[in-house]
Length: 337
Image (cartoon, rainbow, N blue to C red; front, side, top):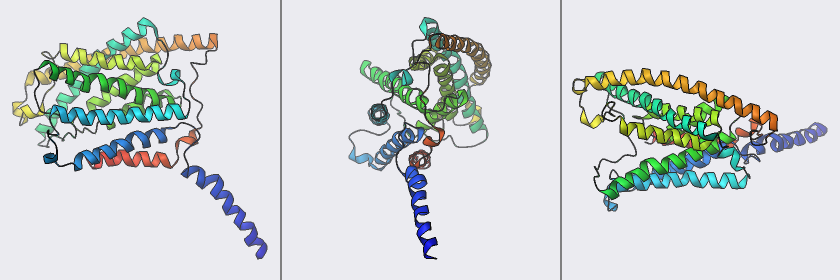
């Protein structure tokens, strides 16, 4: 009996050392769990602080442009902080996160991809609002938004910086840079996961479907061009097209309509046509992007380029306690919104 007890203790120690402790301790590899825990953990902390601060304690309204810009800046800086810490700690090379030069053709295709992304996302946004009103459902609330109308030069400049320039650069750097780099080198994983996570980061039920479309288009571009700047150009193309086509395919503001009867019928028709045209355009562009990827792969094989090789991370290293923490923080961001 004594011999069995003595033999059982090392067995428990072995399990603790080989199975339990590795799960509870951070991984030796950069992984999606660390990125999730850092990015969404800080985002949830900022969200709780922002929601708990009484409006009367601030000299500005939370729904003013200043309030929106402030919380947006803090959330983006949190993503940037995680990006810097993870890449520096694990010594991730820049070509893994930023990608490689795809050439002028790749940059041009990336920018043009923003056109169908705009047509599909705005069309889905408008139809979503219409069907919600027609069904009698309340329009989903937004957590971060501003209601002030700015006509001054400084106000327009602040809007451009905080709603276009900073989000494009930092969000793409995080989701299509860091997240993309640490994921397994499977096309459907590297396209779907960054798109879903970037859409969830916005914590916006009203815009989730349209943001998912933009995220998928950016992920397609990032994967096939192997360049993070290209996904930035796709979002830039989206905003440029949105401004140029505002009179043809306007973004329906839910505050301007009270029910489905007030909804402009021409907006519905334009949205349907825009979605159909956008799908056709994106299929053509994906074919061109796949050709670009094929040429890159052939060049990598011929030159035995190290830049074409993904990070070598064992699949099991992605699922530590930090992965559970990251998922919980992500869920809490939406539950508490």
